[in-house]
Image (cartoon, rainbow, N blue to C red):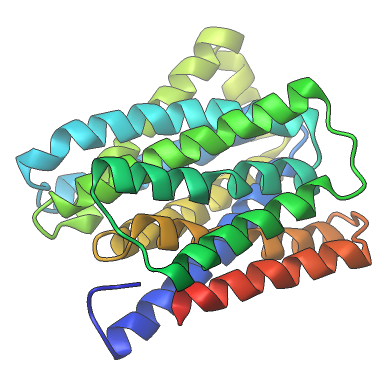
Length: 287
């Protein structure tokens, strides 16, 4: 999966799985918030603030990566808006798997077309198993509305797009994966601009006084998010994009667990079996 060997490979595998857990966690925080647009905006403020500090204090990535930073930043904003819309139409156990499950195959295809990446039979099987298991988790016993499915699949498409962009861009950053990540996350300042343009400044600041705990949870979710995707970008610098993406999407298993334990969502035996299919795919990717 990765060009390096030994301890670095094991570290990268563990890191991407950790990122999967963190990613499922912040998505659960977002889904559990009553006003998800407000929550996503405050998460974005936390992300952008940390990114600003890193950019000011550290080196810049190589100039060759700057167009990819801009493209990825804009796609991430589209992803944030799409994710909020998806969670308005579906519960966590449905929207999250559809969005995440549709992306690894698209990432693998995009990486082959634009980065000329090849993937072996075992890892190709891993990507297929992860995607199939994720979609099975989402669709078992569920009636998905056309609008809900479209919102979740649109989210998956944006995930695939920014993953391929970042996979290419970070490799052109001159070894500055942290600087690349922080520079891309500067675009998250656009989220509060969009929120204020739509609802006004009082709607952003009033909850700080009336619901400080909720805003605090959103800020923590933002910090978790930047850590999760920072790990992924680091892994993309040396790993096959489709494999990294699929391994990251094992987060749906964590999302099912979180949905069951924290949000009290029902989980069937068939869904647990689908989770095992995802795990089997992850094993193929890390073999």
